[in-house]
Image 1 (cartoon, rainbow, N blue to C red):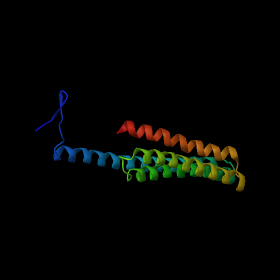
Image 2 (cartoon, rainbow, N blue to C red):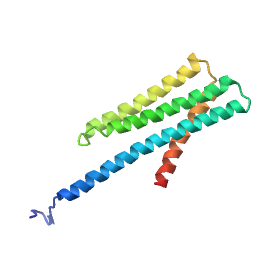
Image 3 (cartoon, rainbow, N blue to C red):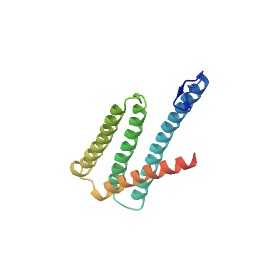
Image 4 (cartoon, rainbow, N blue to C red):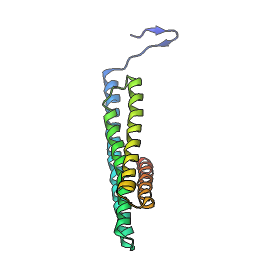
Length: 154
């Protein structure tokens, strides 16, 4: 039985339709978590390959360690992003204000972690700034491109 509101009849979802929607959302969340893990794995693999290649072409071990350190900061940033994405799925979607606050908090948290780790690599460990930033940019480029390519593939 439907109630008329204006000219449009109101219709509620049947239990089977509700179950189908919930299952689709659950599947999408699982696929997003798998995508995030895959992207972090690609980041880690490519950073290791490039740091090995830098060492292999005759650069100093400190230069290769600097590339590896910058890439590790980027991998940690990607892992933190994946972790926070999975954690935000557990928060109620009905509280938009809380979701927005968490979004800003997680973005600021990732920014501060990246700045602190890059400063640690360059200022405290005295690694080559160019190599550290190069490794970081490489890792971030993999994060963006792998996410795009894997989404297009699926």
